[in-house]
Length: 413
Image: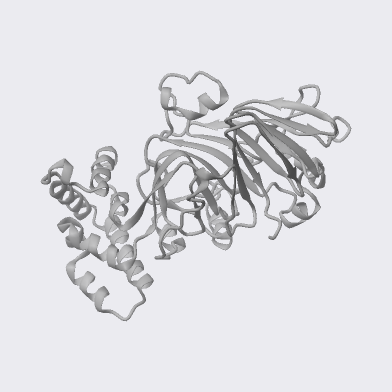
């Protein structure tokens, strides 16, 4: 390989792969074809654009002369030049993050991601459904908006939701609810006990699950549409799509979160969630491990989900809620694998970018020019660039109206 190619201190244009999952946006609503300047195929869903070196769908780097090489091959051949010495050593010569554009017109599954130890166990036990031995902390940043279910409600709101719907209260058993309220368990363990009971009973008593769903549906439909809560409208929408499904109950038991453009949420290991609708930038540790337990025709693994769930009852933290006011926003999260920077400029502007380790740039709007070694190269909307670690500094010129995201590795971790 090293005889055929050489690596240079330049920005490498990337060619990326699209994932056509069923929940993806179609036709005129599909953001990914618009971004890439391609015509969407009729009826075809455009769910995710993967930018990185995951073996399931690695990007390709365009070399001088136009030849393309898989990004994992380039990194395998030149780990220190691409990643940087420290990053190559820390992450076993692999790009530690995966950047995505995600476009959902329908709800994704109720899911959570394992921590590193549990990911290794799941991968060893079932490599078909858990292809990676890596954890998957992730950040979601709204491009326009995002509606999602994230984490468990605080105990008082959780119990109120159970008490508010006869179908759900009967399914859990009023006695169980009373016992949990009066027990000496912590709030987290009370929620854990009740949620585990709900999920396990959904599997062991499907007829009772069906009865509960029908009763809740009847309760909601008895009210005028204008008097229904947002959660109730969502329940009806998802019930129409999925029928009797244990994933319907989290509509009332999880936090319903709505992000505006530029706002983000961080999802650590074990946090249950489901993206419902919206277009986002997503960045995560380089993994495709997902443990699902509802709202999906895909493989569901309820036992594993219950093992990995986190019952953190703190309010969902919105990252950079004032992002619209700033030209530059850095989304700092606890993950050591990635950090996201968002640049949005109303007027022509420029930035000198320090590049102590590998970075990937993605142009969502406008055009940019990258100045390196006395040469200036222009790029347009939809382009993504690998900036190898051997490039220590570069200058970026942003056109009016530009929106650019950078995925990099935090220095302090």
